[in-house]
Amino acid sequence: MVQAGRETAVRAEAAERETAEESEGAAVPIRIGTAGWSYEDWKGIVYPARPRRGFDPLELMASLFDTNEINSTFYRIPSPQAVSAWTRRVAHNPHFQFTAKLYRGFTHERSSGDAEEKAFRAAMEPMAADGRLGALLVQFPVSFHNTADNRDALASILDRFSDLPLAAEFRHASWNRTDGLDVLAARDAAFVNIDQPWLGDNLRTTDHSAPGLAYYRFHGRNAEKWFGPDTSNEERYNYLYSPAELEPYVARIRGAAAALAPGATVKEAEPEDAKNDPRLRAPAGGVSAILNNHFRGQAVANAIQLQHRLTGELVAVPESLVAVYPALRSITLSNEPQTSLFGPPRGNEA
Image 1 (cartoon, one colour):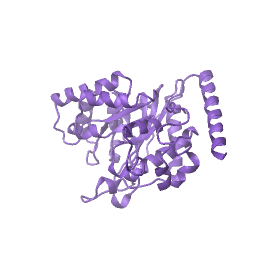
Image 2 (tube, one colour):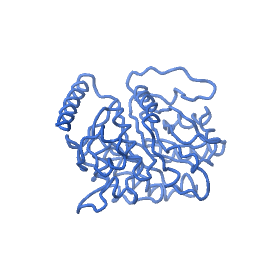
Image 3 (cartoon, one colour):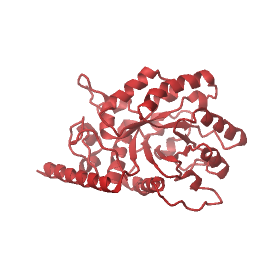
Image 4 (cartoon, one colour):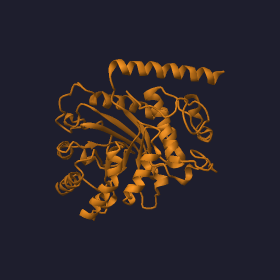
């Protein structure tokens, strides 16, 4: 009876929201999701330990969320056929968009040239043509500091892919200055706002956006394991955000969506550190928020919590996930792992 009552309330809420959207026009979409979908330690938590024949992890992710950040493109350039297959697997959610990491040969190894550019462009073409590419994430390591040479390198990389929606992630605080922001603003590229441990010269909290896009990434706050040659990615990103830690980002993400909305008022520049430089704010577009604390499905749990706070919507999740993260029980519908009550989720809107 309690479950039925919750489902009835959610249907009423969804109908009310649709009516409001029709009368007010389309809002700026807010898409919440995870970084990647293929992790061994998600088995038995996010995914069945013994999946039935035909079970598709990506299909499940696209039933829970409206975006996913593709990690594998950072490690190798995929074939266009593989990318086309990804887009087909999310076809049940018309609001779903991927973001994709640029191949590391451009950003970390700095060895890629024309051949790799051609191959990566060919790979992304099916996704972009299908309207499923929300952003190309150009990610740099913390060793990439804001220097004249590195600003030139950044500009060169962005220029190579200037016809795609671009977002650049920096880990070092020196990039949150006017000279670094100028490079992005000249190319309509977004500055990725990250949450990470506040250690040394690590980048602190920002709220930048660009024409058409604001991008947030949550890496966790595992300060003890953040640095060190022997630290694995599993250890570094082993962190579960509390609701209190996520709460400030509810307002930040809503604020970013408001700044991107048609007719939004632009504030005056902050001349000192350009923390929220208005040249990186413009009408239209959407907000992507990606949870990268992937260890044991923590990213999925936190993405569900953040999505619920932003939309009020309930989604159906695997019972195995609720068993590991019981705080989800009060904000999810049931243990049905494949779809919500209403089929594929609608676009999350501010």
